[in-house]
Each structure stands twice: as structure tokens, then as C-alpha cells.
Image (cartoon, rainbow, N blue to C red; front, side, top):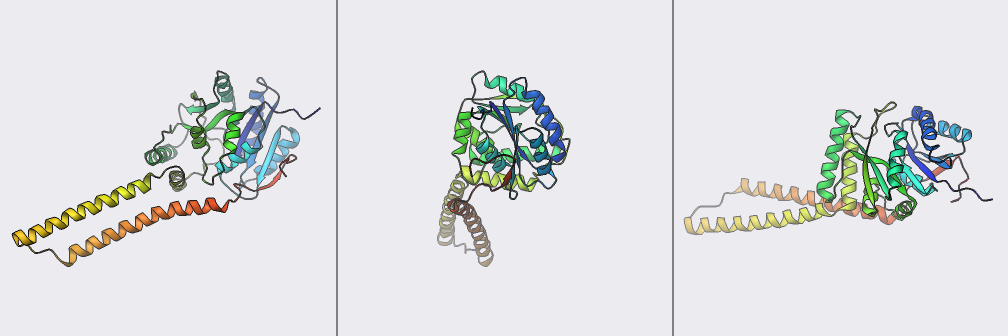
Length: 315
């Protein structure tokens, strides 16, 4: 008799919350068992600086339904999610964080909603249990991202979700270097619903997303999914050229009609520095796009697995 395929897979990127893993496991088992005992918990250790991998291995020894994947180095949360989706075998796959802010008990709500005929169900945090800075930084990130990408995103919706197997298969086809699980899920276009869930305070560790990282993440996402900065650069260039042409005509009229001499060195230098600065800024924007193209052409793997707690059939 062949190996039984899991009905539900739980994909968890792990970083900086090793102490939460045993409780997370216990609560997941308690929540999932009434739905099905045929589940798997895929924990992807993104080279967490604590002893997360040792805990994952102990959980796997205790319960073979816990499958651990250990990265060779830190590749980032969204690549860890990608690895989890690549290895997950369930008919339904839940993606959640490891810090217990995504409460395992809310999976039942996500699953029941999916059973109503949805392929993608995301949890909307009714009341975010985060610091004021993190909530403000998150809103700023989504505001910048929405403006440049032209797509709408709710800042109260993160990665906590359940998706069907066909959505997972579609995710696996998206192999670009700049990755965002929520953006990809939205772009794929399957039948989706967002539902209200309870969000818990962070019990262990602290978020690795500083304002600087969020800004860099927004820039990467904008460059990867939108050419609006290039269009704005072109529009600004044409606008500046038209204004300069009109100003030149005005100076000529003043000189020949009214005999007013053209101002000298100061105005010229200010104009040169202004145009020069804008040219460098536009070259920088163009350079970002060229750099991203260069990264894509390398065709490097999205992540490198050091070891697993199970037999890796992909080897």
C-alpha cells in the first residue's frame, strides 16, 4: 500500500521564534484533528539564529507528520514559504507565521469558508496586536506599494491563508527572484474571499521587519510588478522639457521686445544642477530595473536546502 497523501498541509516559515514551536505544534494538532488526522506540518527553518532547527527535529522525531526543511542560509520569509509550497502535498495548504500571532484555532474558520467553494481564503486581522510602529510602517508600505503598482492591498491582510492544491500548483510555476506570497496569490486570480480572524499579541521574539526592510521590500515589489516609476520618469522629463522650452521663448521675447537682459551665471548653474540631479535619479530608477533583469537572467535557485527530517524525493 502506498503512502497516504495528506489532506491538509501547514506551511510555516520559521525565524526567530523557536520557543513558540512546541506550543504551535500542540495547538495545530488539537485544531486539525477534528478536521482530519491526515495532515502534515511543514516547518521551513530560514536559518533562524536560535535553536529552531533542533526543536523542529525533535518534533519530527516525536510525530512524523512534522516535516522539517533547513535552509543552508537565510533566504527570506517568502522564499521559505515557496519551499513549503514546493514540498507540501496536501489537498489544502495553510500558510501561517510561527510566532503564534496567527492563531492555529482560526484555521477552522479558513477551512470552513474554503468549503463554501473558494480556492483562496485569507484572514483579515480585525484588531492587529502589533506595536504602533509596526502598524504604521505596514500601512506606509502598502500605501507606497499600491500607488506604484496600481493594485489594491488591505494592510490588515497578511500571509495567513488556506489555498487549494490547484492554486499551489500555479504558485509553483512562478519562479521569479522577487517574491511575495500574497501578491502572487492575488495575481493568480482564483476565487478568493477574505474573512475576519482574531490576531494575537506576539508572545516570543520580535519582528525582523524594520522600516528600512519594509521600504526595500516595497521597492523590490514595485520594480518586480510595475513599470509606473519609468512612466513617471518619462512624464516628468517631457514636462520639464516643455516648461524649459516655454521659458526660453519667454526670455527671447523679453530680450528682443522689452530689452530685458537674461540673468547670468546663477540661474544657469541652478538649472544645470537641477537637470543633472534629475538625470541621475532617472538613471538610478532605470538601473534598478536593469539590476532586477540581471538577477533574473542568472537563473539561480530560489533557495538551497541543507537537510530535511524526511526523505527528500526531489533529490
